[in-house]
Each structure stands twice: as C-alpha cells, then as structure tokens.
Image (cartoon, rainbow, N blue to C red):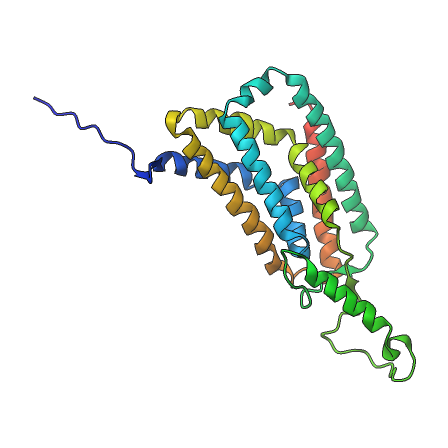
Length: 264
C-alpha cells in the first residue's frame, strides 16, 4: 500500500507565498533595466526634485497596469491592435524629442550643476529652491556686486561659483513627463499588461497574490531608485558630469525611440 501525501503551498495570512514571490521576481526582472522611465526617475532623484511625486506616479501607474493585466482587460486590448500601434508611434516621437533636448543640454551646456551640499528634502525639492534663493540673495550683497566689501579674492573652495544651481523643474512638468514616459511606452503594455497578466492568470486563485508581489516590486524599485539616486549627488556636482549624464540619456532615449518604429 502506498500513501500519497498532499501538501499545500505555504501561505501568509491566506496569501499564497509562492505566487507572491513569483510576482515579485517577475516584476523586478521586467522593471530593472536601462530605459527611458528609469533614467528620468534617476535624473530627478539626483536633482532632488519632486522625488516622491515622480516615484509615486511610476509606482501607481505600474499598479494600474498590473490590475488591468490580471483582471483580463489585456485580452480586450489584444482585440484592438491599432491602439497599441498609435501608442507605439506617439511614444517613439516623444522619446526622440526628449532625447534631442538632452543632447542639446550636453552639447550646449548652461553651466548648471547640482549643489549637493545645499540640497534638502528630495521629496519636496525645497532644498534646491532654497539654494537658488540663497544664490540670488548673495548676488545682491556688496561683496557680490563689486561694491564696498568686495575684495576680489576667490571664494573658499566650498562655495559654488563656476557652476550655478540648476533651475528647478516644475511639479506639473515633471509629472507630465513622467506620465508620458510611462503610458506612451508600448513595451509597458506588452510586459506589464500582456506578459505579466498572462503569467498571473496561470496561478489560478493566487493570481492576485502574484499581482501583489509584482506591485511590491514596482514600489520598492521606483522609490529605491529615486531616493537612492541622491548618493550620486557628489559625483554629479560639476557641469561636466551633467553633460555626460545628459549625453547618455540622449543616446538611450533616441535609441529607444527609433527602435520602437523599426521592424522587428
């Protein structure tokens, strides 16, 4: 006589752990890549501008797309392939334009740099604004204007003189750019809606646990990338470093835009 032992997958508060971990793993594998969205999040994190808002927009957008895929709406989108085609061309145009703007910043720099020492809370971006105000206030002092007290002696090495603090991006502009880089990217529908949604539905009743794992991956990645980027502040405290970064962004953005319209 043989005995057959039936075991159930381990759960955490009723959530299938295997489905949760599978969603976490696939979500990270799809999202961790050098792409337009990640480069934008990285750049905003380094500049410490609207960091929380940008990370939240990316994470919430991913969560919405995951829900769409797992709920089966992805199958509906497959029935209207022209919609994906429109998104593909619109996304390609946006990426190329964004890349050209980055290329212009790299070729014709404005002498901007990150004042890492004065930058404050990355979530609100107030540190950059305060630094700019202090810079403007200093310009009106007698020493800065050449009046009484101006000694003509070079300032201390800690002062920011050769490079000025880069002007802040408005919250609206950052949000709209982030939304465009997310929702005008056809790959996000192929990966997050179709692929991830299809795999999630193979988990049966555990598909929403799979979706939760993928959602956790998005939240952890975008907030980790956005807030972790400030560690590069010291490296990118010179205009030359920003020219290199903008050059890399230009190449990646234009390359991705062109690849969207090339035949595969």
